Length: 534
Ligand code: SIN
Image 1: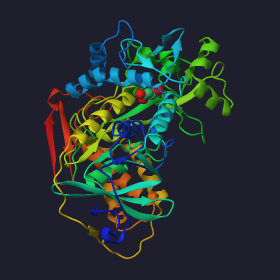
Image 2: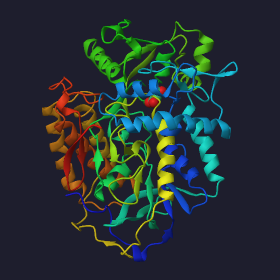
Image 3: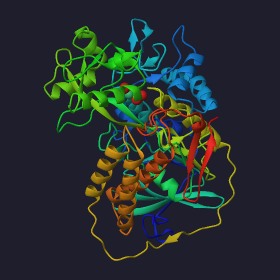
Image 4: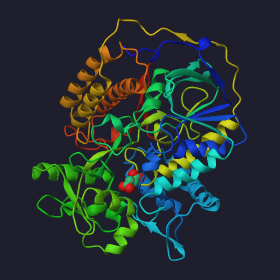
C-alpha cells in the first residue's frame, strides 16, 4: 500500500545538482557534520532553516564530564542506568569520551558557556549523579549553539540551501545515489546526485498531539529511509518530557528539567507535592517516572495539568537562570517567581530511528544517519537529559570522518523514473489527516499503552493508509502527513510486539521489565527481526 516513492518523477527532466556529500538537516548534527567536511564539495539542505529545528529550541544544555570530581565513567554509568539495559555500551563510551573533546573545541572556537564567577557553571538534571550540564544564555542553549555553528558553516564555503524538502532517496543495490527534493518556494522538484548522503533531519515529535518539537519535525528522514529499504530500530521508545507549559491556546513550550534541577517542586491541583510518593529522587527521578507520576496525579485529581513551583527559590537566581521561560510565561500573564506554572507531559525525543553503526552508517551503503533521526543505541530505552546535543556533535564528526575515507563504486543507473500509481483524484485534507494521526497516537500509543488500544490504533492507521497513499501530493504538508502515517504504523507495530515495560515504553498490560526482552526490534520494508542488546 505504501508506494515506492511519494511522487512521479523522471530525473532526466529535472534540474540536477552534484555533490560529493549531501547533508539533510540543519540542527546540531547537520551543522557539525558540515563543519567537519570543509574543503569537500558538500551541500547542506534544510526544510526549515535554522530556527525550525529541535536544536535551536533546546533549553537543556550539553552534558559533559568536565567538572572536577566528574568523570566519563560516571557519565557512562548514568547514561546506562537511564537507558534501562538497551544502550549500546560501546556507543556510550564513544559519547562520553569524545564528547569532552567536542565540547572543549566549541569553547576554543569562541562559544561562551555560562559561568559562575571565573568557572564554568554546571547544572543538574534528573538521572545525573552530579552537576554536569553546560548552558549558554541560560535556558536558550540550543539557540546559542545552533546560531554559533550556523554562522561558522555559512561562512565556511559549504553550500547551504534552505526551503528544500526531502521527498525521497534514490538508491541502487550498490548504494545511495541521490535525493529527490522539493523546492518549497518554487514548488518544483530537483535532484541532488551524491553517492554519500548524511541524514540529520531530526526526530518525529509532531506525530503526537502534545509535543515540544517544532512543526517541521515530522519524521521525513526516517520515512524516506524506510521507503528505500533501510533498517529502523527501537521505534517503540519515544521519550515524553514531563513538563511542558499547558494553557489552552498556548504553544506546548518546554519548561526545562533544569528548573527542577535548581530546586523547583511539582504540585498537584490541590497544591500538594507528590513526587516522593513515586521515587526516592522525587522531582529528579528519571523522566519516564516523573511523566507517569504526573499522568497519575492528573487522573486522581481529575485535572488537565499539574504545576511547577519556583516561588520558594531566590527570585534573582530564577530570572537569571531561566530568562526564556521567564519571558514566555510573562507573555501569558504569569510571573514565575510568584505564580505556579501549569505543566503536563508531551512527546519530546525519539530514541528509535534509522539503525546505524558507530560511524553513522545505515544498512544502505553510502547512506549515513546522525542525531535524532538515527539510532546507534547510545540512548537505550530512555535518553538521559542533555545527552542529545552531545550525541549530535560526537556522531556527526565520526560520520564526516568516515565519509571522507569512503571509496564507493560508480553508479550504474543514470536516470530514475517512477510513475505514481494513478487512481483518479481523491480529496484529502492533509491537516485533518495530521490532526487525526496526532490525536490517535497521543491517546493510544502515548505515555501508557496496552494491546487493545494499540491494536485499535493500528487498524485505524492501516485504514487511513488505504486512501492516504492514493493521493499524489505536490507540497510538503501532504508528504509530511504521509510520512507521519508511515512512522506511526511502525511505532505502533514495535510497541505491540514489545510485551514488557522498559524505559519510555510503558505497557499497562505488561508492567514489568522482562530480561528475555533485552533485545532490539529491527524493522525494514522487507524484514523484521530481533537482535540482542550489546
Ligand atoms: C530539558 O531542558 O528539560 C530538556 C533537556 C533534554 O531533553 O535533554
